[in-house]
Image (tube, rainbow, N blue to C red; front, top):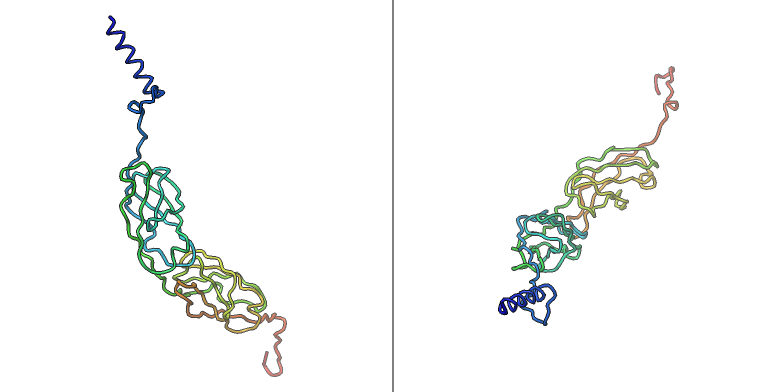
Length: 231
């Protein structure tokens, strides 16, 4: 009976050791919960354009947790957790200054191992943009005109210029940029030179495309002269 009492006392003490760590012993404390090892399956976009603006990348894989961080050549990037299979991260412009390759990994604290497999991402200098059409293709002199410039190879920092003068530009996609041609930039009739430029390390300037400006001639100013048959 006495031995049973000692066993019971030991059992009670064991519970106390486990729950409140009595007696300063660490043998009964619970270990920190571990996280799964992250794995990368895909990184997009890949290749990434080498431009002078930041780029958002998406990392797909498995084993991601809220504390997982995307790494760019082992340097941590601002990371957003979407799910156990998807993360996004912002690559700063300072990391996109030249062509080459980088290593993308995911780090998860309290995982063993804590760093995922590496995926290679290529940085490429984009080709010079091209213009295939300007819509509408012309307008009145001294009249502002909203234009869609359609083509290829546009980037977020591409800009439109009229006769070499850069104007405010809105990036829509890699195939369209929009701009409002200001009245002062199309003040004379004729063909105006329109270009799109992606600054270094981008592809440079496109070939010029014509935008035709013309005078407004009201119909009442055209009179038929029956004597000579001329207008």
